[in-house]
Image (cartoon, rainbow, N blue to C red; front, side, top):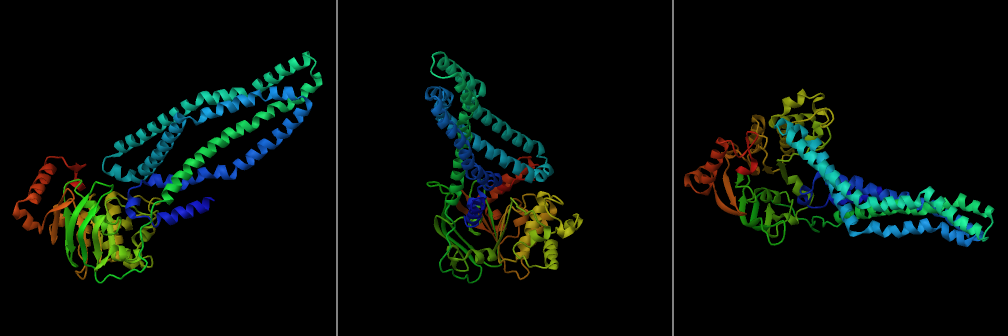
Length: 503
């Protein structure tokens, strides 16, 4: 069952839109495939057997005790009936709400652990270790609060059930009832012995039902979250894929919004010719990252079309699209594999010479040679990389793929000189025929761009060469001056480096 769940989850996650995946936290998906799938295990694997073993002996004992004295048998069942009467109090709306809050807090703490561990090298490199620790501490505090609230909602009922099912309470009930039956001549003193021996075992089913109920509730919530992911519509694949002719990129009247009634992109028209570099700039929230994510088909536009080589992206096979479009984003994710495997992700049969050549062009070859096992060093086990080094590995990966279309979204977020040089090299191809779409927060990176497109509120405000836009003294020029002033004044920076969304 667990294998089936995980295979179905893996298959669905491999087909959902990349934009859906990028909007989910690593810890959230890790909890889904790990803890949530495991939460179904006890209910399937253990609860049926435990219920059978817990009911067979007590029911046989109950049948025997009825033959001895049915009146004392009913008295012996009083603790069980009291415990059963308390069960509905365990399903009140407040307890269900507390359980949901606890599940949410558990997900947040799982995510915070993953992000804290994965990002600790980067946040420390940029002086953010204390902030990351505070965020982790806040998630832990939130978890403790939710756990305490859930326990508080249950503690009274749980204590009551433990009291009425406890051996002393059951023994007291049996002795009291037996004393009355013996004194009024209803039963012989010797007949009290089987009730003393077997009576306490009659409470076992209720205790097991309590644990089984918790397992059932946990499994039900986990299955609900798994079902939600399995219900995510996969990225539509064409029945009859078409082949692109060239790598000219064209966006026609593109519209897109993450939710109904709120458009992030409004009527974007843009043409990216082979051999050109197009830079997208604009204030935070203008739609830059959303725009560049349409090209590798993280999302499909709600209106208009995005075409590559004259073919709508929706008519291309995913394999063809990913072969033609390489991308490097600010949030670099490296596999827990060797450096060579990470660089050769798109070209798994690449030789070490080709991998090293891509690393040289990305200006990371010398750093790789300093690692414990060079290109065989396993990232995350043998060594950790800084943010800039990880981005250069990602750039080397894109260079090795040698895709005719390259998308760079904040690839200079960790703008050390080596990363800056790597990005500059990535903007050109040996044959000069690569189509490049880039978001950069440093004017130096895009100073040689063929076209700069400035977005404002999801629409194109200005376009032209850098020199033309600065000479025009319009919105781009004013935006750039304000950006430079903010950087010079010490704002708009990330620990001294310009913020990615400021340009």
